[in-house]
Structure formats: structure tokens, C-alpha cells
Image (cartoon, chains in turn brown, blue):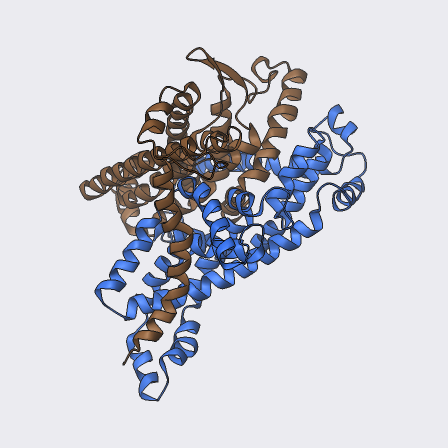
Length: 296
Length: 298
């Protein structure tokens, strides 16, 4: 077929133009601004070198948010994947209502973090606290999101509830691509349920693990909406001798640095660090998983 | 063996079937109830007055008709215009989806069919940009949109076209990627036959290629639709929290901010925000699950 160059150009122009204007140009500007004293107000922007980058690591809130985000991500990667893998095994079994179960587990994932955050704020602050008081369960009598020791776990719990059904469906799709004869043959050979799962099913869905770990890792690391609506960073605590917010994850710290304090350039520098860490982590994870896939 | 043949994708719990199955059935039913509890709490508490909620958050409402009183209170609220937020969210989502699907298909088609060094380069640029988190571009984007809007004399901030344009920019890389993969599997012969019959390049695309892409459109529409409908940060930055144009997530936050701890109203507003998506899910469940899983696997 003869193609006309001007038509080809016309066809790709809208996407490429929007892509350049919305992602590439702001990305470039962002890298530059991270090296300046941009504050969003002053029209004169001066180059300051790496000052913003060295400064952030002396800031208690940032150091804490960084560590908290790593912890939160680690908890989620484990929790979401364990729960969703178990769910996927259950709903691929010979259950009567398995389609209803699949749909039910999947639903929370369709609703945005903002709406879910408020719903769970109500659950933690009212429902569970009331339940704790009525039934005399000690640890529930104080809201789990008002305690600096439990708040990250509480957020992980909500994240798992929200995300497990989605990850479950990815496992389900992978499990369904395993021929029934393979598992049948193993059980004829005398392999019990757990041996079949560990030795046959799990290696055969290894490529699904690459995807699900990647998704849970990047999603937890970038968490903002849920964090905002559920806790908005609270409660307060002390860290490195300063008062900080105990559930403020990195994405929220970036936003607050810019909006609450007008320190735009510093927020931008944090965002650049955020970006680099995210890329390093996700590339490492995919690399390790891919190697495991080959072994399996 | 006494049990029926297993179909592909089924994992049998035990050879003797019954005991393992019953444990599994009870476990999954329990988990299902736990997963659904938060939704049940939203529904029962949306039908209560603030006082009733304080008395007990888990009891059933005294009178279900209170739910209509609460809904009325939300739609007639003077501080947050919920009705227009619904309309705006709907308009923004639908138009953004149309724009993303249409332009991404055009772009992906040319990138597949025109094999050259630059098309490979453009495609790789789209793919690699998917790792860029929103946080790195969000503040420069707002400033850049301000500059751009001033330069062309058409404001991009706080406008419908501005946010639709932003959604095209953020949505097109993944959409082009998915459609690119799909178009590679569409036989070239169809297009060649059309050309021989005298079809122009543009007509070939619109009349032959576009209809063939329908299955991939489902994936693209669902992935982008759920993201755009629920998105919070981009509307917050582009539209502002007090602008003319507001989306549902912005309205819910404004509501929760204005009426701290008035859970009767906050939960009713959450319920209203969930209903459209849950209704859609009930009707298009198969497509939604398939679309989201396929989008992730690719």
C-alpha cells in the first residue's frame, strides 16, 4: 500500500503533540526546576545546583516519609499478594458461587481511593472503636489510624482490601491457562494439594508474579488518594527531634512541601528522587522475577 | 475417580473432594462477607441521621426513607454543587475517552504500518514514558499549562478542554501501547485489498481498520475510564478545588472538608459517587474484568 507521509504525520500528530505538551516538556522543566530556587511566586528563577537534593535528607519529615513509604510498600507487596493468591486458589476451585465471589472481591478496586478513604475513615474511627468499646476489645478502643504504631498497617489493610481482587483476577487468568491434565496427572501420581500448588501451579504462573509484584510495588509506592482521604498524614509524632506526621507517605510529602510551604523547587527535587527510586526498584524487581521465570 | 472431570483452570482441593471443598467454601464465604462489609456499612448509615450514627454505626436504620432526605440534602447543598460535579465528571470522562481512543488508534495504526526508524523511536518513547510517575510532572505541568494558555490566549487551567487535553497526554501512551499490540495481529491483506479497490488511506483506516479494533477498544475504554472517573490529583491541579468545573472526587473531598464528621452526609455522598460505577460493573462485569486484566498483562 502506498502511504502518504503527510497523512501519517497527521495521524500521529494529536497523540504525539499531547504527549509532548503534557509529559515530556513538563518532565524536562521539572528536572530543571529541581535545581533552582523556584517557589511558584517569584518570577525570577535562579539556578542553585544540588542544594535541594542535599537539603531534603536533613529534613525529618522527608526521611521519615521515605522510610515509611518503603515499609508500607514492603507490607503491601507481601500482604496483597498472599491474600490475592489465596483468593485466586479459592475461586478457581469447584465452588458453587465462584463467579459471585470473583465479582465481589473485585469490586473495591473499581472505586477510587478518595471515596474508599472516607469510608474506611468511618470504619476505623466509628465502627471499630464502637465495637471495641462494646465488646471490650482493648486494642480497638483507640482508632487504629490515630495511633502512630498502627496507622501504616491500617492503611495497608485498606490497600489490600482495595487491591487484592484485582491482583486475584490476574492470578486467576494465569491459573486458567494451566491445562487441567497437568494438575490431574500430579494428583494421580500422589501429590497432595499443597505439593501440587507449590511444585506445579506456582512455577507455571511465574510470569503472573512478575506482573503482580510490579503492580503492587509501583502502586503502593505512589499511594496518594487513599493516604489523603484516610489519614491526611496524621497522627503527629516525633522523629529526629522534630514533630512530624506519622502516615505521610512520599507522594503526600511532595504535595505538601509544594502546597503548604510554597517550597516548589524542593518538592520538585523530592519528586525527582521519588522517580529515580521508583525506577530503580521496579527495574530490579522485574529483572529478578524474569530470572526466576526462566529457572521455573 | 468418582468426581466429574476437571475443566481447565480448576484446581481440585482434594482427591476425595468433600472435606477440602467444604473448608474452602466456608473460608471463601467468610472472606466475601468481610470484603462486602464496608459497602454494607455505607448503605445502612446513608439511611440514618447523624444522631443515629453516633448511637450505633452497625445497627439497621430506623427508617430507610431517611436515605432520600440525605440525598436531597446533598443535592441542595449550598457549598458543594453535587449536581454539576456529576455532570462535569460525566462530560470529562466521556469526552476524554472518545478523544483518547480515537487519536490513540490513529497513532498506533501508523506506528505499526509505517515501519521506519522514527516510528520505532516514537513507540519506544511512549512505552518508556509509562514509568514516569505523576508526581514528577504535576507541578511543572500546571505552570506550563498557565504559560501555554497565556501564549495562545485560550486558558487551559480550570477548563474542560484543558483537562481533556491533559488526559489525552497521560492516557495515550498506554492506549497506543495496547492498540499497537492488537493491530500487529490484524492481517495486512484486508487493508491491501481495500487499497486495490481504490480506498484512500484515510478511508481504509476509518472504514476497515477502526471497526476491527473494537475488542481492543473495550480494554482501552475500561482502563482509562475507571482511572479518569476516580482520578483526584489531576483534576485538583488542573481544575482547582474551587473552580467552575468540578469532578465527583473533588466534590466528595470538598464535602468531607466542609462537614467534618457529619458522617450521614459524607457517607451518602460516597454512596452516590459509587453507584454509577457499580451499576456499570453489574452490566459489563465480564468486559470490565477482562479489560483490566488484559491491560495489566500486556
